Image (cartoon, rainbow, N blue to C red):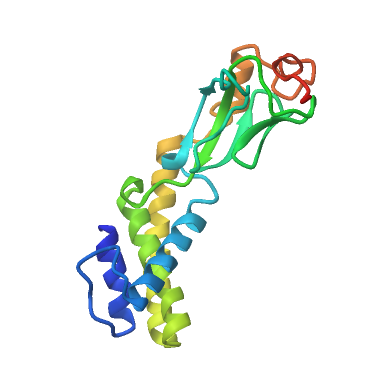
Length: 201
């Protein structure tokens, strides 16, 4: 399902005509697009196989020493609990600084991916979940809303199945275990975090 197809599904759900451009400036199309984007972000919030990356290394800026994260990054987990995401940058809360003197490995990061980067079943889930919300806001048709929520639920079941298969969840397949196998101690303050930051002047 393309994003334009999803947008037009929302419009048809409230009796509006389809549009030919995802960037249509018609008020109803803009509202539908806003609803799609909101649900797309919310749906990815728990973290799925398609929006999680592991062992991503970020290098500080040569001038500022800051490490700016891409705007799509929602959460990060680093090799030490002292380094966190604050705003759009990494922050060393042990040394109270945004300045780093060495690369930082983010062992797990979660991002909000664009529509085309979501798997098909997630696209279907987002489209129907957004349609239910759009109907509730614009039409207040309980029967239509319930129908789309039901279709969204079916799609979500498939998404969860794919997530389980892709991640092969078990006690030996977690970032903590991966780090342990590499001899790292991610939550020990004596780790390298004390040496990666320099207090702000």
